[in-house]
Length: 306
Image 1 (cartoon, rainbow, N blue to C red):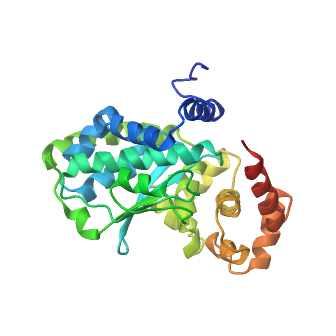
Image 2 (tube, rainbow, N blue to C red):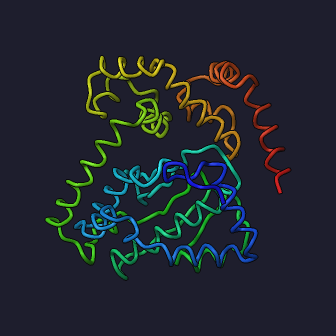
């Protein structure tokens, strides 16, 4: 097994390790269940304690949403409580790989198990969704999560009744949680100072594109800086705001073309374009081929993988 660089495995080595584990076990659903039961929120150190001691489930999820980048930069969690059900969304931040389907099942499985430990038996999940197709028995996945599990969906997510977000945590203690959060803020600030601004912008841009392209001034405000500072820091990376926007749109478009059944017109809308023709011209400029051709080749590549 390769030695981690600076404490972290390279993506290619990480994917290889996942594939090795999968190939060594015939029963993948059992493997997901074992992983889900083994991983404890306590393994996250101060972040784990801040999650457990937060007053309510909503507070716990907000802490994960904000501070999970201290754990990994390969994925983020995002709470969408604007509708019913509320959605706890798992968003991958790495290029597509078949190993990620198994990783995503493990991630949401572990999260579901830990939510039930944090809140207690009152917590009920409405359903769980995965973007990939089911590779095993759907009923076994339902038994694992304790709720219906839907595959070939638009999101990797856990759905909750909004009332669940107001449930008190078993070990909820606002004073302790706020104290731990102050330590996380200090660590998070140092991470953000060292992190690429363009990466931070892509994280924020991607989930908002379907509502239209945000203004640079609004994003700068979210990041706690002036619009002028945002432009200056991007220039230091050799980039413009338009460059970062194109990167976010391109990555999302490629993911949707590869992994969803959305039409090209729908993908144009989801990536912030008002017209399919404008999107198609931009995509060909980014990738070197038309969206339909990219989808055709990508799906052939996926089917040819072992």
